[in-house]
Image (cartoon, rainbow, N blue to C red; front, side, top):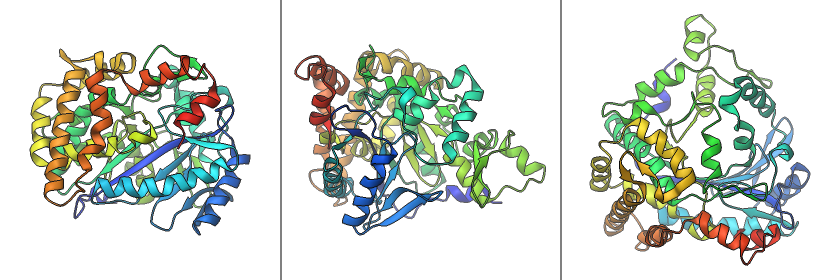
Length: 431
């Protein structure tokens, strides 16, 4: 089995996003549950003349005509996965065309699509799990880990993000972009913190989501420490993945627990895992940056609908413009894996006021934002992007200029004009 075949470089550079939204009751803000999610998905199926996606006979997603997908997440949220685009401006425009029409169908059933970093009003004990057979296997696996996975169920059922997928063109390009994104992730996350509420309560931190992700499964989540080395490669990713067991696998008729042994041992003892097992195994790891056939930035809290394009624009501006990418790597040259681990913890609580190593996260994030803007301008001048591409970063400029994060704005609204009413928050922040 050729394990490296799932790390084949792309022929060109495209951008995709995965927008996760809570599917919540418009009055209570709580996750709706499958008995309401299914009719919503059926309405999307009809209105878009789309194709259904099912698991164990249950409708759990929709394949949209333009290549995007809408899927039900583990805890009842929904995820919009775009088709890939060469220009981030085209990606954002397509998402802004489709998602409001989808959201309108939800509103017809008194449901709302709520972006952000965490479904803010659903208690962990009341997560309405989707009818996906692998969920019970995953829950049992994480429970078996004990304290290191204390927040696994909250992460599975409540956390939200807007993730960006990027391409790499060669082994050298993979190495450079992986190192860049891994080093950038906890620092840039400070500009995106947006989950200060949990179960309707003020948590005292700016990103409860980031805190939760720190206690899921340290072996398969967090900072890819090897990626900070200048010689990091797909081989390092493969070695890391081989050292971990599968959580689950598909045996042809359904999902079953994976063998409680590292994948490497399965290959060595004649268990004959398949390429499909390997592909599934790579999807059962959730570092801040997930490397496979693409590089997936997973570190950022989801932000408001108005700021939808900020994450993809930031990532593309840095990663897809050589001078900006190399300047960012030089800026972060002395940042270690330990610095990144500590920054992740500190950013969750302090946002832009945290440190990475001995330097200010806020100042470093501002410098990275400037480099991303330069990259987008260069791409626009080259005709790769629309002329308004740099404007997608304006919401982040406001964050670093004012020092007021999305989380702090949310808190101000919650205790101020919303008067701690879930319906008011949902009405203001939904798509």
